[in-house]
Image 1 (cartoon, rainbow, N blue to C red):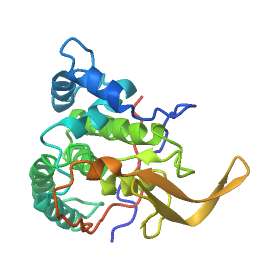
Image 2 (image 1 turned 120 degrees about the vertical axis):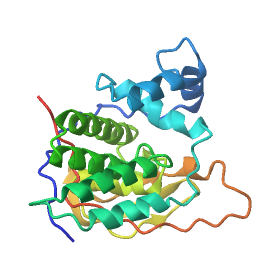
Image 3 (image 1 turned 90 degrees about the vertical axis):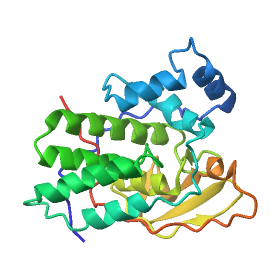
Length: 246
């Protein structure tokens, strides 16, 4: 696997207090046509590459997706599998333009089922940048940064009662990669929370942290009857880091 495909920098401003998703508040804001956070309005801005979207906008955009008909976390995403296969063939020193264009078209298809995947957004940013499309590169990095910050802001992840909240299992792995943390196999510890152990624990405020907790409850909220979830394989670049533009 290619090492260090991107030369990106992790510089995220995280809130001092967690912004845990409040379902009543999210529904009220995103369903209200007069609200700044009306979901149709946010989606239009997101799809149009609006880089003025702020952390509040991304919060309602990400967690409001749960209440959209398009949110179907149990559906397979063949385009994502194809995208990861294409990405594995990139030569980071001299990427092939035809391959980069294939990645962009495949990523656009994959985003129809997972529009907020940090992994997909990162690949799109890289492909645009390698093709010289600096404006589009900046847009997709801005989107990726916003989604990663939203998940990080939802909880510190250090305890079962303060987990980070995700809409797809892969989003948890992408966030850990963005933090530069190596991880092991996740394990389910309750009906709503999983624990992902770190291969190299680290110390925060004098306490040794051996892993991160994630709330996955939204994934199963509308689980089809009789459906058994099987995780897809994951693949992502080392150094999945948000770039900061000045």
